[in-house]
Amino acid sequence: MAAGAVSTAVLLSRILGLVREQVLAGLFGASTAMDAFVVAFRIPNLLRDLFGEGALSAAFVTVFTEYKEKKGMAVTWALANNVMTATTLLLSLIILTAFIFSGDIVRILAPDFVLIPGKVELTRKLTEIMLPFLLFISLAALLMGILNTFGHFFLPSSASAVFNLLSITVGGGLALLFGRSGIEPIYGMAIGTLAGGMGQMAIQLPLVLKKGFRPRPMLRLQDPGLKKVGRLVLPAVIGLSATQLNVFINTNFASQCAEGSISWLNYAFRLMQLPIGLFGVAVSMASMPVMARDAARGESKELAETLVSSLVLASAFTVPASVGLWFLGAPIVRLIFEHGRFTPYDTAMTAEAIRFYSIGLMGYAGIKVVVPAFYAIKETRWPVAGSFLAVAANVAIILLTLSSLQHRAIALSTGLSVSLSFLLLTAVLYRRLGGLPLRRLFSDLARIAIAAAAMGTVLICLVPYMKGGTAVLALKLALLIGLAGGGYLLLLHLMGLDVAAKILGRMRRQEGR
Image 1 (spheres, rainbow, N blue to C red):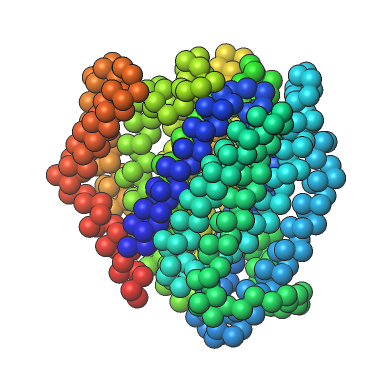
Image 2 (cartoon, rainbow, N blue to C red):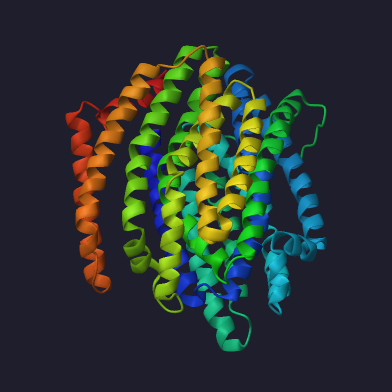
C-alpha cells in the first residue's frame, strides 16, 4: 500500500516535472541561458544530495525509528528538534560560503563557460538566487522522514509536486514578465525554483504538527541521538561526495562538448527521472521505514525478504522502462519538448542521450533500494566504496569514449558506473545479512527479462509508425505504450509473477507487523 501511494504521488510529481521541463524547453530550448540555469541549479542540488535529502534523511529515519520504538515520543520529538536546529545552522553556513565563492564554483564546475561572454556571470547570479533552496529542501526531507515513520506516504511524496507546480507557475509567470520588462527571463525560473523549495517544506508541516511535533530551537551537541545521526551521516557524506564528484566530472566534460550538450543531457535525465522516481524512489521510501524497523528488532531474515521484494518490484518496472526509452526516446522527446526554441536537432541529440542513460535505469533504481538497507543495519562503509567505484568507472568510460560519442559518452558512463556500484552493494548485502532468497530473486528477474524482451520485439516492429503531428503522435504513443505495457504485464502474469498481488502484498504484511 505504501509503495502504491508513493508511486501515485511521485507520478503526479514527475508529470508536473515534465511540464516544468516543457516550459523550460519552450522558453529557452538548449540555449546559453538554459545551460547556465542547469549548472546553477546543479550547485544547490549537488549540496542537497550531499548534506540534505540523501545522507541526512536516511540517517535520521534510522535513528528516529529506533527512538520511536524504544524511547517514547517526548525524547523522539526532542531528537527531531535537535537534528533540525543543527541542520539549519550547518546548511546556513554552507550556503553563505557557497554564496561568497559562487563565481569560483561556477568556473570550476563548467570551465569552458568562460569562452562565451557573460555565461559565467549569468550562471553565478542564478546560483546565488537558488542557493537557499538547499535549506528548504533539506528540512522538507526531514519532515518527510518523520511522516514516513508514522505511515504517511502520499502527502510527503506529493510535496515534490508542489515544488514543480510553483516552479511552473511562479517561474514561468516571472519569466514571461521579465522578458517583457527587459530583464533576463531565466531569472524568473530561478525565483520559481526557490519558491518551489519553500512550498515543498511548508505543505508537510501541518501534518507533522498534528502528530505532536512542536518545533523549537534546540542544540545539544552531546546528545547521543544527534551523535548517532552524525556517525551515520559522515561516512554517507563521504560516499555521496563521490557521487557528486561524478556530477562535477560529467558537467566538466559536458561543458567541453558542443554548445547545448549540458541542456541535452539535462532534458534526457529529466525523462529518466520519471521511472527512477516512480519505481526506484517510491519503493525505497516505502521500504526504508520497514527495513529500519526490522533492523531495530534484529529480524535479519525479514529485512532480507523486504529487500528482495523491493528489488523485484523496482526491476519489474524499470527493465521494461529501459526497453521503452531505448526504442521510443526520439518520439517521446519530440512530443514533449519539440516546441518553441527546442529544435528537431535538439530532439535528436536528447534522444541519443536517453538511449545511453537507459542502460543504467535498473542500476539507478536498485541503488535507491539497497543503500537504505545499509543504513538500517548501521553499515555505511560499503556504500562509500560503491560510490568511489562508480567514480573510477565513470572517468575511465568517459576518457575511452568521449572523442567518439561526445555527450553520449557521459550518459553511457553514468549508466554503466551506477550499475557496477549496484552489483557490488547487492553482493555485500548478501554476505552482511547472512544470505538473500536468491532463488526467488533470480527466478523473478528471469521472467521479467523474458517479458521485457517480448515487449521490445513489439516495439521494434511498431516504432517506424510513430510519426505525425502532436495530437496524432500523442495518440499513437499512448496506444503503443498501452499495448506494449499491457502485454508485458499479461506475460508476467502468465509466467506466475503477479507484481501487484505478490510483491505489494508482501510489503503490506511487513507494514502490518
